[in-house]
Length: 428
Ligand code: IMP
Image (cartoon, rainbow, N blue to C red; front, side, top):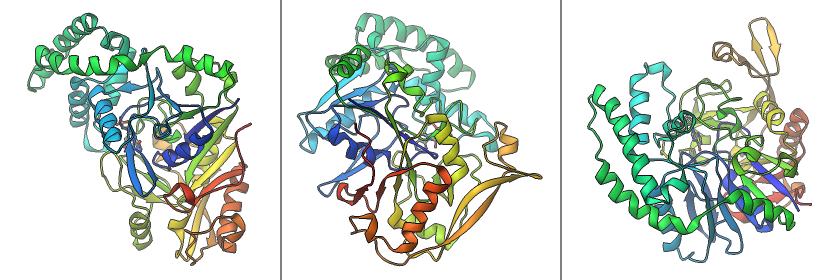
């Protein structure tokens, strides 16, 4: 029995979908525990590319149970569209459960996400995915959220929706936005409710039973540790916690059931949206990385900002999630770069520091301190062993492991399942 958590160690988009899909082979259950369709997980297999936003990456394996946990915020329309996309590609034999305690993202959340961003001054904008995630979590904290259990009960749903639409229409009126029609939204969402109802379960009970039956459970984090509401670069973060600590609370299991934590990192760094990014650079090399790595957002299509690998950030992620193995993704993208830089510490005024300061003012003044390593020219996309790598690529991986104090469990040299090299098996 194993409880393995996959977390992003950077600002999201590290390639967690590919790792989760890979680890899902030995998992009986795959669970998303936070976020919503702000996430975008790309999975390639049999030459086909799939972009998942809400559905766990185990959906392509018919024997795997896929759970959307209680910590998620779920847009029902987006969920059904994703299921339709999967079914159209021929996958009809899937196994899905949606937590009755998860929250529902409704049309007013999307409008509020846009409105709140518009109201902020330019340099204060978070650059959200505009999927309504922040406002849905705000409703949850404000105790006016509509949960999946309410959504599945049409009488309760109607009453709660009525209350919230009345409430938010008052706000829309102040800001000259069109008011929403309760009846129109109810009629549309009623159909979604009926379709989603068969999947609604108490997923906490299911998960606890699965652990008792000695099953392997994989928890699939969305976003990355530096976007964590508590431990990320606040306020330029998302509204949930994509850390291993978030798993017990957001799925209803004991923390003692987590056996391993797989931290996923790119061989370099990327970020979408606003917020300081110490190792960011923009030159011909960055353009090359963006093109070869196809660094454009899966959810919004925005070009991603490019930076060198930042091991201060990796050590921060290790501390907050207890990472026991590292997956290094997109190593092949670095082929052909003459000199590679790795950030080993920050200079903050007179001090050399090895942590991410809480104050965004301090964060913005951190200058990266780099070491440089020679790159390699060889195409590594067809290698299948660590020993096949050019010496400089081996040194690069070994240096990351040494600087983070984390063993490398997997590295990846291309998007396909077959381009994944395993050095340490996290399953017991
Ligand atoms: P929100 O989650 O849509 O509220 O956006 C908050 C911040 O998190 C923005 O900077 C987004 O670009 C970022 N973000 C949210 N989800 C992802 C993701 O899956 N990958 C990368 N960045 C994300």
